[in-house]
Image 1: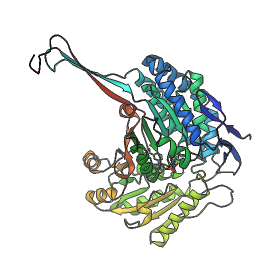
Image 2 (image 1 turned 45 degrees about the vertical axis):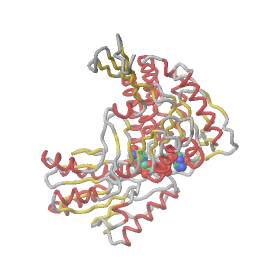
Image 3 (image 1 turned 180 degrees about the horizontal axis):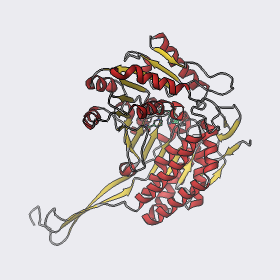
Image 4 (image 1 turned 30 degrees about the vertical axis):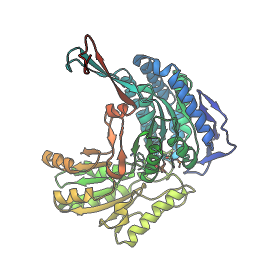
Length: 489
Ligand code: NDP
């Protein structure tokens, strides 16, 4: 296996970073060195912001028609599909996620790009002719300008694609800082974007650490909008950075979602949903259904079913098509997950499956783990674990389920399993989260916006609303014909 090395991508080409350091990425599954990225500096960020500013003020991208931008973005989507195998390999090697989920990520990324292309052609405003004699108002929607994008490590290509093509579709120019762990696909996609026809300077990528590159970028005076996805702690720091220059931001942060199973649900589907909710993407997923709430009348049988299925979960080589849970992102994160498991045991939750680091491998693997009898005061009920660890709590009534689900600092997503439409609609209305799904889980489509409330952040990603984040309105009021004087003539 050869190690991939990336320079910075600034002004439409790969260039040396201004610093001398590099970041080495080792596969979390094997320990092999798989990639090397520049340890970026504030100077690299300044150069990228300047390139994006010139591209926005003078370059062709914002001046192209929506149709022309759509054609370029559709070519990018085609190139992502043509290069699917390479992108999948990079995601598996750098993230440690199972290959079948990585394939879904790249297909999803291409789909998001294609949807964003369609929005480029629909960017439209509003006209008022009913606001007084001789008056016409044109409300136009314009690109917000130069945007800074910061992405996390769990879905590098997918979350990039929830932002970059939407920003480009609006006519913005972009500086992206990917996670220090998983920067490879960002550089690959930037190069594909250039091949597709995105002009020089419209899409720049600067690798580096959050504390240097991320901090400098999100507090940069040359940026017009920041879209961040990551932890709640870093997100609030980013909002502090943007507030220094009164720059608009959108922050998609952590979650601690409830997956509520009512007694009248399709229990086979709900059991699969319970596994999907916590083991998909190694549990490293912001919309994980990591708190499973089961109605008491079916709890013993249902939990037995979930445990029996989870016992069959294959943890190991992420390149194996049969693998369900791959390697966690790094040894620090593995230690964090084992710390949460320890706290669950010490605080009195009942460990019914797993609980250990997976042995016999050099990588950062953790067994599929399930706790029953988890109570709201316990750490594993409250904290985002971001690993393959499920917490189960039993409930009696609809009111109990809603109270328990909302008893969290987060508000990203929640899930309901019931065949009763009244239950689905009334519970969905009462759940405090930006996203609710019923009788399905971690599902979606590019048209559907994602947003958080409470500690899960604010702003929209995907859908028409996600596109509009990268735009702003300008109101032009025109008086035609005579204007009545206001002051004595
Ligand atoms: P972090 O917040 O640690 O990092 C996210 C990104 O921010 C990384 O690129 C990181 O760089 C960068 N960063 C770190 N410090 C700063 C800073 N001071 N200023 C600007 N940028 C900075 O999150 P993780 O990468 O650990 O991702 C996991 C988190 O992301 C979880 O909490 C998860 O819930 C959340 N998430 C939310 C999603 C959503 O849509 N709501 C989707 C996916 C994940 P570096 O890697 O170099 O530290």
